[in-house]
Amino acid sequence: MRALAGRYGTPLYVYQLDDVRAAAAELRAILPEPSRLYYSLKANPHPRLVAELAGLGYHAEISSVGELAVVEQVGARTADCLYTGPGKTRAEIAYAVRAGVRTFSVESEADHGRVTEVAEELGAQVETLVRLNPPAQRGRAGLRMAGAATQFGVGTEDFHPNSPLVKDGAAVRPRGLHLFSATNIAQEHTLIEELRTSIRVAATELSAAGLSARLLDLGGGFAAPYAQQGRRAHYPGLRAALAGSLDEHFPSWREGVPMPAFESGRYLVAESGSLVCTVLDVKTVRDSTYVVLDAGTNVLSGMSGVGRILPPAADIVPLSGPGCHDRPTVQVTVVGPLCTPLDVLSRARPQPVPAVGELVAVPNVGAYGASASLLGFLSRPTPAEVVLDGDEVVEATRRTLTTDAL
Image 1 (spheres, one colour):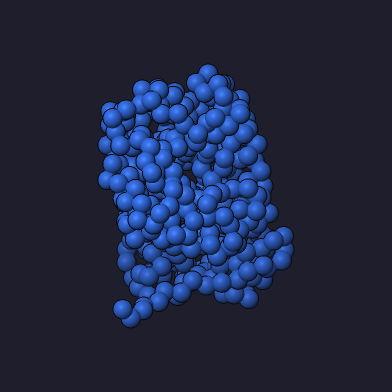
Image 2: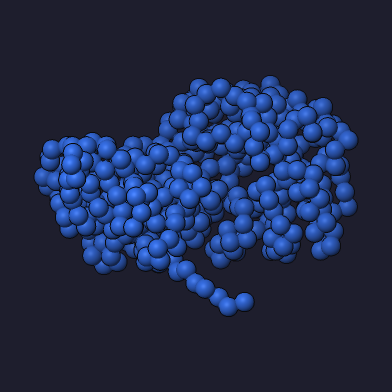
């Protein structure tokens, strides 16, 4: 990484395709077979990562025309995409339909109505998954997206035989259900319980609504560390547990009726990415030690503009060679170069103190890194992004922020 930093400068994101392949194989191995697997581009829409996962049989779960444009750019099949999101506009629905997208997750009667209107106007036939917000589950999750009043999905009380959501139309046909209760669930027993409950709720609600499902998207929740050292979660009993639950509630699922589907972003790409930074300053103010990097929340904020995915607790790993890990550990606050007291990557955590000018790396930032950060804030340069296949650089890019005349 030191050689890459010398060539491309810092801040620098480095993605390893070998890690993506390993995670993709591991996820497939822990899920029931057959299953349809989606990569959630929101985690990282870098074209080389999207292309790699498409080549490994992962379809694209997208929620914007920008993400759809990446799918088109890499030559993946748009007809295999699942278009999601609680606030799809007529314009983006039309763009998606014209691009070949044929499956939409609908989250309300109004959302369903817009998809229907656009499909009719364009003379297209599309299929929908109704996103349900099922009852709450107990358990520890990184971010809960259902079980309480949220903007996602419809309540089970609004999913019934008289709802337009379950009616066949000339342009729109209901294909099944979409459930996604929580993300980043590290405990296997909790993830199993979440997904088992989703299967049970899906079977109950489909029967009550009189709808026969051909696709059952159970979401995800597969955990991986964020900006800290560690490995993605291990779920050795997940496959058997879910297969048993599917056997109980959907006896024909092994013949693909319905086809179970799962989504993942962070599990597939988090470990593939590191952020290489340069230490600009190290100083002690009263009793606090601060390490100032050339990378802050402008390049690694974890959605800080809308509430962090996780509190600021990034690890910095020295890259200076032998002896750099033998330094004394003290309570260190790691900050970026921005002119705001909110530019904090890690607050008062025990870490070795690096030297000014030294290179350090933040691990496990292949998901929710550059694309989830405040790249435009204070108009600082955007980070370079390098993709490695083994030791070979296969792509080196830098995102640009442009202003176009209207």
